[in-house]
Structure formats: C-alpha cells, structure tokens
Length: 182
Image 1 (cartoon, rainbow, N blue to C red):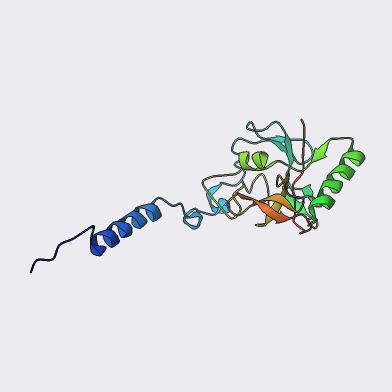
Image 2: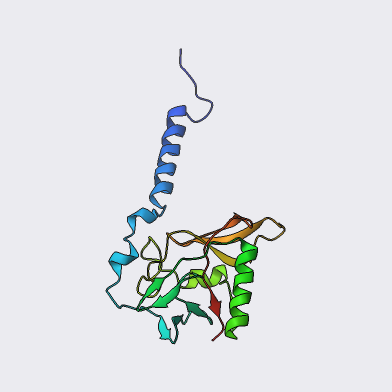
C-alpha cells in the first residue's frame, strides 16, 4: 500500500521555518557587539562637533547648542561636576524654564530627533562621544516629547545605544540634557 501526501511534510515545513528564523536572526544587529565609545574615540577627538563658549557644543546635523553635561551639572575643565538632576517630565520642563529666566537664553529639553542626530552609531555605553559629553551616564534621558493621545507617557532616549521609547511615565524621574537656539 502506497502512502500519499496531501501537502507539505512536517519535516519540510520545519526545515523551512528553521532556515527562515536563522536568516532573520543573522540580520539582527546586536549592540553588545559594538565597542564602548570610550574605547573608540581618541582623547580630544571631537568628530563633527564644534566647541562654543561656556560648555556648549554645536553639531551640523541640528540647529541647536547642547550643554555638555546633564542638567544640574557644571562643565569644568573638560568634565562634568556636581549632581545630575533626575526629575519628572513636568519638573524637567519647569527646570528648563527656570534656567531660561535666569540666563536670558531660551533653554529646553532636546527633541528625540536632536538626541538621535548627535548619537554615535558605531559605539555604545553610552552611544555619545565621551570627549563631547564627558561621563554621560547610561540612563533613560527625557526628551521634550510626550506620547500622542496620552496624558501619562513621555519619550526618553536610552543613552546606552540611543534607542527611543515613548512609554515612560511622566511621573517617573529621569535625567535630561538642555539645548538652546544658537
């Protein structure tokens, strides 16, 4: 008696699924394979950044000036001194307004696009040039964006590899950077 097949065999289907999964995984990028930015950059190497007075830097990809240290710290002798502020989204926005009033500048939190523009794609931990942003902690950093259609979530950038998430509770406390127009 001859056995007839009415469709693809389980063996054939399983083999195809295995190879599809293998090819899919081979195409995935694992950020742990990238070197730490601190190991990649030579001392003093600035990349595309241009230093501006008072701890500010400019990057040609964005039309803002970044303060080199997280809010709450001071840039002194090529390092960040003091304690970085970790605040709720609303308190971080208020902090930027207060800095603006005291300094006469127009300070704000950076957008996700601005944070992405200064990110280094060839390294991690954090994914930012350590000569420009010294001792930047690996943390979720607030941006100026909230999740659309929600009053509870804001957007953060994880500095380890620069990924963005818009599912951070607005009440959670995170560090943040400050930017202003040139």
